[in-house]
Length: 120
Image (tube, rainbow, N blue to C red; front, top):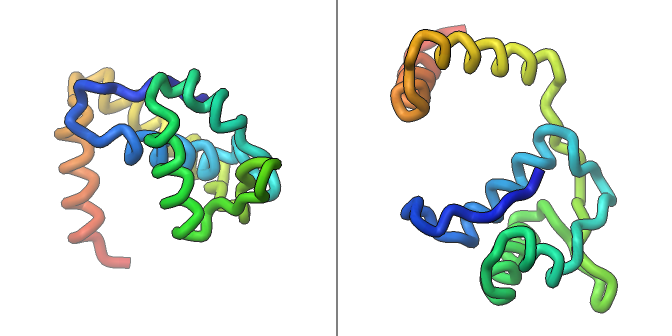
């Protein structure tokens, strides 16, 4: 679900927008050929200037994630959704970490370190 950007997070708004759109694609909420809301609608959803929206969309387009048709809008190029089983496992891990009082940043550091050091 797309939501307002956090203007006090220290992360540029266009990056937050890009990350939200990528997340929606990964979660399967936006699939190949899905049309994004109009730029004006996105401006209202994210509560930022239209130029910020266009910057995010253009960067996603240059990454090959979106395409655009003049006067029609922006579209998702390809599916990139994650297997629902993996999503469920991640949700379970997050619930466990939260129930034990582990904050987001510590969780991310822990996952990164385990990722780097875990051998297959």
